[in-house]
Image (cartoon, rainbow, N blue to C red; front, side, top):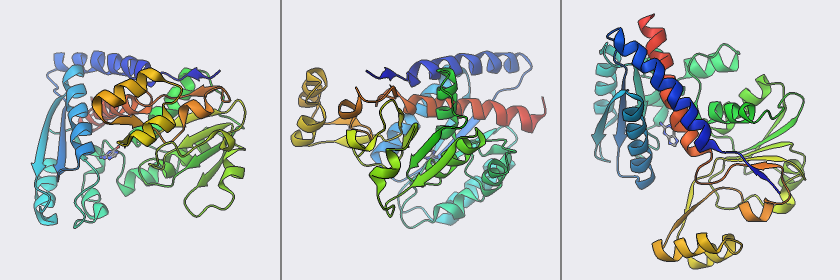
Length: 305
Ligand code: GUN
């Protein structure tokens, strides 16, 4: 039977630590501020941003959301980023992704002052990460490393497989696992013999955005499984397939008409692996908590406190 890696619990611990530091800074008249840019109506983004603002409030970080219609131009967003870069009261700038299709994300992300880049997505910060000299690191993979350490899971020398090669999770995750001395493989949609590769993993990170994609025959016995996926399922057929072993989840799906599920078929792998992150309540809350920690780091470094 797998043990649950409780991301929510670790997120609370990180939040408490950040809150304590934020309060100390407030006594020195330093008020940390996070500015979020949200363009378009992507429903998941609306929820993610709401969660980020809520957690900022809980830890005492000031926040604002600059909202734009989906037909906003690159020039308008650039103008606002430039203002935020110049504004000494703003410590963290976050552009929620995805941006509307007409805008190339890198053209926007590249404009953020690297010292205020609390997502750690600027090429400068990615470069420092690659060199092992990171300042601000991408939140999700940072949270995952913290989670493995919290549960005293050995990374050194282990075979780690990351499924997904996104700039946000897959690639930085692989770099961070390598820096912890794992032997790392990145798999993606063109990988041949995917099952063979994932089955070698002592630590398997799934970040592909496909509901329940990782099945029992794709994991090694005793593996540690980290599920980064947050997918919404809406059909009864999917609910019956994924929640057959969990009547409570099935019932909730019937009431609501939708449910969240990760990239791993949780109940299928559950009694084969040693540790697993649940969805929801695993990696999601950790990502937001690390964002708060990055805001604190950015403020401390930029203001040279
Ligand atoms: N969209 C999905 N995940 C993220 C994230 O970590 N940061 C930002 N800015 N957008 C996202």
